[in-house]
Image (tube, rainbow, N blue to C red; front, side, top):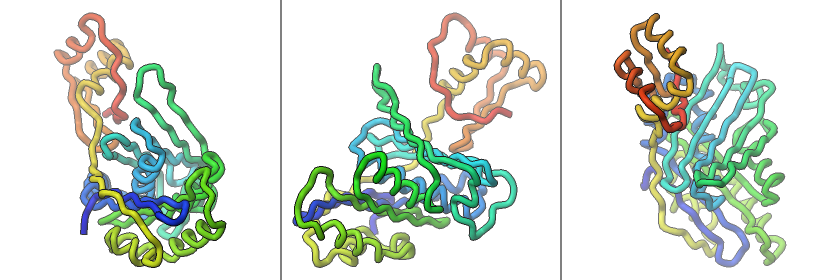
Amino acid sequence: MKKDTLQRFLFDEAPVRGALVRLDDSWREINARHDYPPVLRDRLGELAAAGILLAANLKFDGQLILQIQGQGALRLLVVEVNAATRTLRATARWDGELPADADLATLTGQGQCVITLDPKQAGAEPYQGIVALEGGSVASLLTHYMERSEQLDTLIMLAADGDCAAGMLLQKLPGSSGDEDDWPRARELAATLKQEELLTLSADDILYRLFHQEVIRAFDAESVAFQCSCSRERVGGMLRMIGRDEVESILSEQGSVEIACEFCQQKYVFDEDDAAELFAGPQDPIEPASPTRH
């Protein structure tokens, strides 16, 4: 079975396209850096799988950021996907006990999902959409987003546990004609897929299991990997944004400034000599690396 792959496919005789994603080593690498309660871990895994599916489906080469923000025990889920390199990172925050059998709406309380598309090109403005937490699951809220904001008939199915995160996206091609029964039939077949099958079957097996009576064109599988974009240079840029006075205050109290990346837990330590070098002469701004200060 191929691991950590994105598999896109197309119906040759119906106006339907789709994609399957399976995160194995990449998901375990994300999960190993944090001690997440299982219910939160699984929701973050679903969001990670969804991020890869959406980035691939939107034919987008910048950065896709999915954030679920809540006011309940679950405070934040974040997934960042580099669409060009098919790499991702993810993290979460929570406060207090998380009911093991709670749905997403219960975990977040009053919450929302923010979807950001950042082209990462000079002069190009990021796009941001806000989605209500409807339906009680990551899959249902993103399905609502695609249908309402993008006006595309869509089915999203997601599953995750401690070892694997996986998902399937099925979509009616925009502006297509064809038989009016094509999309309902494809959606009905796809909806029979169980979460256990998503987590245990290969993409080839899933496509055969669901659509063996259809003519399916499967494209070459693409590799997916975990990669954190933090660096000492980016953390230094964040410290310059904080300002010399604040950094010197921390140094006087603690002797050094220690920054830990929220995504990969990599620690960066700056002493007085490092700080002096940071603030010596003009500095170009550097994008912050989503750190936690200690």
